[in-house]
Image (cartoon, rainbow, N blue to C red):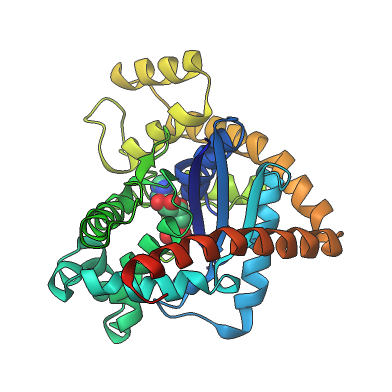
Length: 325
Ligand code: AMP
């Protein structure tokens, strides 16, 4: 039997390089492996755990589906859907919350960070984020979850929930594991922290033009002269270089750096060009897909239907074990 895969991205706007390298690349790899059955969603309900704009939520859901398709997610191979249209996720999340303590959620570093970032949005939805994420995964009995390393604490919560449920109610849910990619942690262009949609100046969108990419890469803080320790912005620069340049070019720039003769503008402009070359075909496909909205509608419609069938079956199974049915 095929193993199942689940992943998703919040509907906060366009995808950035962190999403692409940390999550979507892994999603594509698993989609193209016949041993896996993949479910990929737009995690729109997770979007409301931090401040959001209701007037752009629908547009953003679509934007993510279009970018998924443009990058190479194939609706013939993967089920592409919108989380809020499969309400079984939310019902299951409530049942799961009965085996999770409030203290466990409050101590999660991801929760603490978000509260620090948005003190006015310390809501139940935010506290409950990891439980909903566990429901997203468990409702498909997914074994593998291609997400960035920032999601590891949430996967640990999902595994704890599985162990408790299997032990208390005799369910047979698998413990989900993270599927990792080379870009599982993409640092911020500001040289501190991770690339994130919520930090202005930290990210490159997949739809950015060559000029925008060049401007952003040039803004990465570097030293006056090369040769010092590889930290902060210089570390970001080399990490991106490793991911986008050929091994020969990467090694040459590194050697130049250690010898103190690297011109930062040279590596930055080479990198910007390489990033753009990888994104250009994706941008072309985004343009084409935007002209074919009825196709996008059909993909969403079919995906939501397929996802619901699987989610309903798992939910019934768990409800029976818990004594509801
Ligand atoms: P989010 O935009 O927070 O919904 O994240 C969607 C996916 O992108 C998750 O799998 C994250 O782990 C991944 N992701 C987000 N930012 C980064 C980053 N800077 N580096 C690697 N993966 C990331």
